[in-house]
Amino acid sequence: MSKRVLDIRHVSVVEPRDRMVTADRRIRIEDGRIVSVEADDGSPQRDGDVDGSDLYALPGLIDCHVHLTAVTADEYELTQSSPSYVALSAAAEMRATLARGFTTVRDAGGADYGLGQAVAAGLLPGPRVFHCGKALSQTGGHGDLRPRGAYAWDDGQAHPGIGRIADGVAEVRRAARDEIRRGATHLKVMVSGGCASPTDPIDALQYSDDEIRAVVDEARRAGIYVAAHAYTAAAVARALALGVRTIEHGNLLDEETAARFAPADAYYVPTLVTYAALLEEGTRDGFTEENLAKVRDVHDAGLHALQLATDAGASIAFGTDLLGAMRRRQNEEFALRAAVQEPWDVLRSATCVAADLLDRAGELGTLTPGARADLVLVRHDPSTDVTHLADPESEIVAVLAGGLSCQSSPRRRNT
Image (cartoon, rainbow, N blue to C red; front, side, top):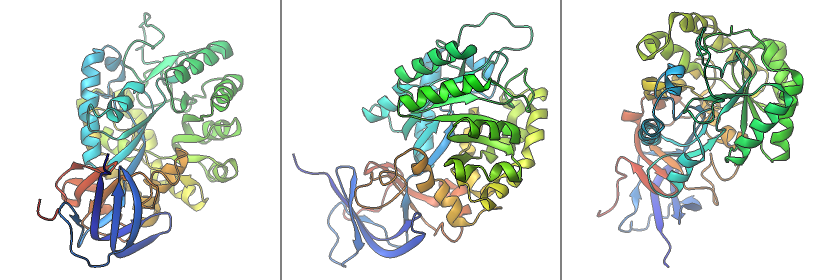
């Protein structure tokens, strides 16, 4: 069988890990992998070559905190939705996510093995999916979405919500093992209150030390890791001390806690855009006034936490955490982070740092030989101004996932 070969000619290559932009390169792709990146020799272009003149090639973007199945911001309503409707809605969201330049995502609650399997089988265009299945929550925790006064609810396995309830070390171990059996690439545990859950304040400390240790132990023995939903400095510090590898949100970090990430070899995943979106649109998409009050508590602190983590040298990955119709605003995270971070640092968070978090260094988040041929062709150099990526419709010329064009029409010679 002949190889599937694609050349991108005369393109400027953006390599975030090396913080380098190199002009007039030829990227050769064979069977979905990059095989060479070298100076373009100026030879005549072949039929099917992509003309990258005046364009920039950057690695496919990675969002480390999405909810592909969150068709609404009302997460209790989501639990009452038809699974088939949610699955088809997720498919539409995956197509849109890919068109926005994200060739890989990490789902932080709700997606299952089947969504990634469908992409791998060619049933639908979409990003590569890493998922935790259902996030683990104590009764009354961030993953317990029952309104006050509600009683009946199953354990969360059958409905299309983001979480499942498990209490006590034995139940937590069983739930962790079950998500691993279902194909989870990481586990997620709720260790503080949250904005979308109805009965827990933001500063609630959730799960006992022994329960968190049990999740971490199960993950380590399965060769995966644990992500923790946590807002306050106390919740973050506790999770890091107990072996959690990634902290989601962390808006209420303090300087002392920010300094704990690097020694713990842990990652910080802020999600700034979701709070701005919720304050503007949350009411229309199912958020109650009680939910919005909690959003206000953490919104203004988000940039400050990002600054503290940046100053402390923490490994910071890109995440958005958008829900429902607000997911269209995914790329706005680039502009928000640019208020605090340098362009290279923002770009690295969505490429090589995210790949490190996923244990896919050299395979994702890079345009080097041997890597997956996931790349985005854009009009401007993101290393000097990353905010152009906040407007994908005007900025992105084409998206390639595994060497296949998935959005727009790359400029090909004689085709």
